[in-house]
Image 1: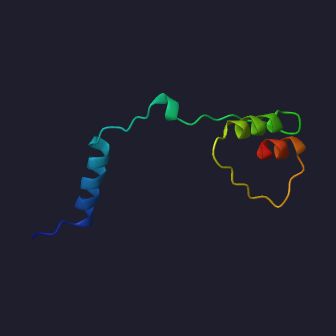
Image 2: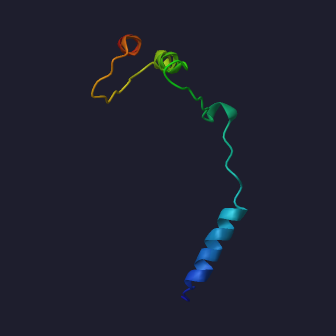
Image 3: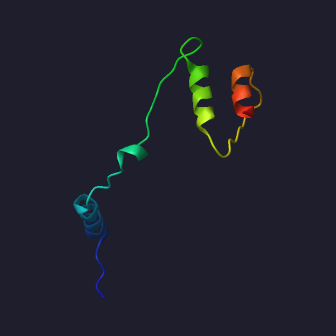
Length: 76
């Protein structure tokens, strides 16, 4: 069996990537981004809104936090 050089191997991989059909995701699976600023930019409300959407498990890694509304949303 004849070996191909690294240049040709890279060339083959590059062309296979370029010529492969693009992967498209349905619109509902694409992530959305929202930006909030603190302290009066709606950050707490946005976090609580997202916490209220969760239906299974929330894992929290925090040393401490002082937001009573977020703590209540986590408990709910």
